[in-house]
Length: 235
Image (cartoon, rainbow, N blue to C red; front, top):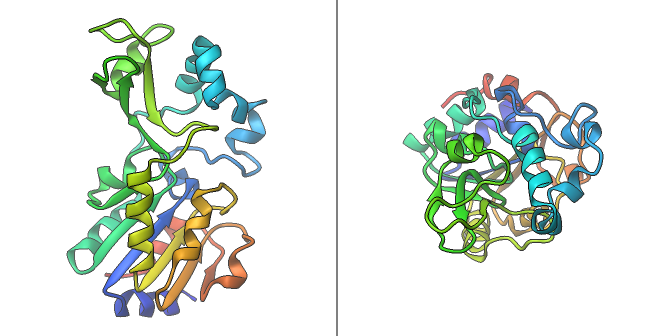
């Protein structure tokens, strides 16, 4: 299957990589739903990452968020770097469920962040921007230094809608791609996972450590470590 994927990459002019948490585990960021993932080790994780919890138990939200969701020392791994390097010869877009910003750190230019980014944070009243370090260095609830209101991470919490502009860009990229490569996602988080149905290209590939319910719909299925797979490919 590696050889088949290589041929698909060589042939395609326009490629979309759809990435999930498995893309960043080699960078030291835990996934969510594996046997050792965040949701297996933290009780009520989905509740604590909800809009309701943020609004009504804000201090508890930030205590959890800072401890479990922020990895300021994480660096892009080989898979991120391969995708970015492929831009030199192909029209490459990334649609990602990740909020870590590692695709951009590796050099990818066209990245649609379906669930936002921990690197962006905004005052809920005046809209002033704050970087990740401001959140990390804040004691308790991060407050705006201009108006004193609570700062909110620019991430899509449970109960919140995805950004319409990001949705449109992601759908357009997927619908017009020759090759869609799904990387490191179990495809169980909706609506993001539903974006795969917009694929109209020649080839749909999936690279994931475990089987997914979408495998039967794919032309190429590889169950293996992402970095290991990408190191067997060439540009």
